[in-house]
Amino acid sequence: MRARQSKRKVGDMGLDGYIPKNLYHDEAGIQVKQSEGIGRNVVDNFVAALQRAKLEKGYIVAFSFGKGAVEEVARLKNAGKLHNRAGES
Image (cartoon, rainbow, N blue to C red):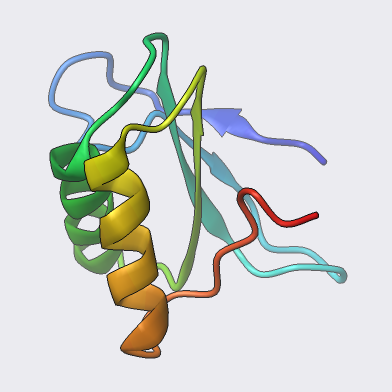
């Protein structure tokens, strides 16, 4: 996978990088958080950033996810707006 870093450090519109479209997958946004227990606001902001960039796929990478983030992902998944792969066994 060849991801590309966002060209802007400040004002990157909530996306730290991109995975370009190729034969095997669609373009996707990437958000990296170097912290533990990220909250619901990170998920909400990331979804908004994907919508602004007109992307349908995205990945959040973090050390761990807090209860609020997990609940928001479950809500989006139940609403049919998200296909979650985090935490699957």
